[in-house]
Amino acid sequence: MSSPHREAITPTTTAAPDRPVLVDIRGLSKAYHRGSETIHVFQDVDLQIQEGEFLALMGPSGSGKSTLLNILAGLDSPDAGNVAIGGEDITRMNARQLAAWRSTHIGFIFQFYNLLPVLTAAQNVELPLLLTNLSRAQRHEHVMTALDVVNLTDRARHFPGQLSGGQQQRVGIARAIVSDPTIILGDEPTGDLDATSAEEILTLLQRLNREFGKTILMVTHDAHAAEHAHATMHLDKGVLSR
Amino acid sequence: MKFTRLILANLLRNKRRTFLTVASVGVAFFLYGTLRSVLTTLDAAAEVGSEARLVTSSASGITFPLPEAYASRLATYDGVSGVTWANWFGGYYKNPQDFFAQFAIQANTYLPMYPEVEITAGDADAFLRERTAALVGIGLMNRYGWQVGQTVTLKGTIFPGDWEFTIRAVYTPTNPSFSAEVLYFHYDYLYERTERSITPGWFILKLDDPDRAAAVAATIDAAFENSNAPTKTETERAFQAGFVTMWGNIGFLVRAIGTAVFFAILFVAANTMMMAARERIGEIAVLKTIGFRNGTLFGLVITESMILALTGGIAGVMLARLAFAGDNPMNSFFPGFGVTGETIVLGIGLALFLGLVTGAIPAWQSARLSVVGALRRIA
Image 1 (cartoon, one colour):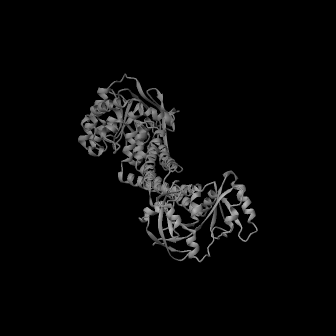
Image 2 (spheres, rainbow over the protein chains, first blue to last red; image 1 turned 180 degrees about the horizontal axis):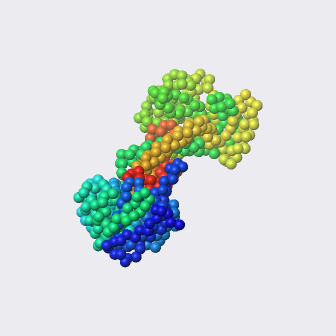
Image 3 (cartoon, rainbow over the protein chains, first blue to last red; image 1 turned 60 degrees about the vertical axis):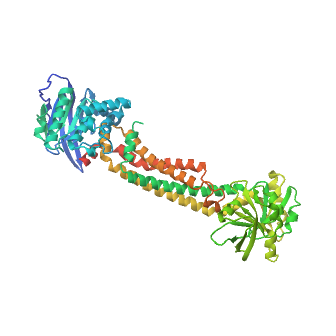
């Protein structure tokens, strides 16, 4: 039975409309409980994202954008529905399986960069690789490649406190791509940056999408930032629309 | 090993706090090393006494002397090959707080029964010949800078007055647990100065066969049971253990202090670790987002805690080991005082336990952290 909120979204992209579906969300529902009150974030949402798409997700504060992103990243669990990424239904995984899955399939970019202040840029980028069986030399090679992509090899030994906001976010992006994940999820990646730095980051994300074929889902409040994506979706009052 | 850099970076995040935590654990383990050494030294002191010697004292306690005539009677028992006696003097040199033991002995019979007392300086014959002569331990000689031939004056407490002794010989113990800080002098000197009112404090009996100690002791005590001065005979080891038992409450006190200190440090270290983990909630959430498993994070936090505890613990006990190596002030009270290998190993085990306990709660909290909630808090 369909809910009034239900809407199957298959964003039209200018990139590659005939590519296979990478993310397949069916009947997704999530609610929070505050005392006896139940607050529905969204109900019965369907969404398909094709490989190589760059999508923006907009919506007012509290609309559930970040919740959707967290569910996609396997950080939060839905009350109902299924989320299949690359053919794997992550809603059936336990916490241990999800952690292992995240380490290889998800690259997460945070609004406030969330770099570890005690580690250098290179060491921060290396973190996801610590969960692999790569040798130290191989890890170093991957880290330097990722830093090269974000044009920060000369800042490899700098600590986050020695970098500007834009540079820190580029390190954050390098950390997100270093393990070559299936999908990159950005939670307002330009939300804490000035216009110039934000533009640099958005250009970099576009480049990752175009040159490296990375699938990107970016939550943003900024319509200008959303313009850099192939398509924009809106989540408001539990309804996902295009 | 690949997480080493991450662990070290976290440990050195707040160098001052890490140093203070390690230092507090180190001080606690220094205290542990010292206090446990008091106990092990007391226990070792009980072992110094020989199984081949019996001590016959008054059944009423060692503060009650026995008739001198008992000496010749005790020598007649089957299995007893020699008899001597001694008295506790209880004086002090200049400072009443500066304690060392002094015994009045029947020297010509006492010394042959104690191979532990090896005369290494001065002249044994001169000591035996001269009534006011003293035989002094090498530790005591070094402590006061005394020389052979020097006259020293002790203030008597049990036997009031100034007592002058001329140092004629110096001994070095052949057993490290045997005190090197005893002053022996002649019973005859004490006997005469007290106007012949003193009698032996206790008798020491040399046995032909240590295996017969219990039987000989029982025979002796039975023989004196209905006399005016009933006896209590036991091996010298048991007699020494009796002295240690007198320290029993100190042993309890030492254990109580040690336990209290350990738990105080446990709470301090646990609080520090919990504070450190709480400050890093956001970072732990980020690591989880990256794909770090709960078990990995648990291991990282608990490893940090164990490194802190082990560093402090090893530093503390090793410092105690160094502080009490060789001659040290504690030897005055506890001959052979030192931190044993067993104390060090046990200390390292305790430090590991401390690290596990103090790290367990923050490690568990880190592992159980809700990523979504934590990310929302830092956003």
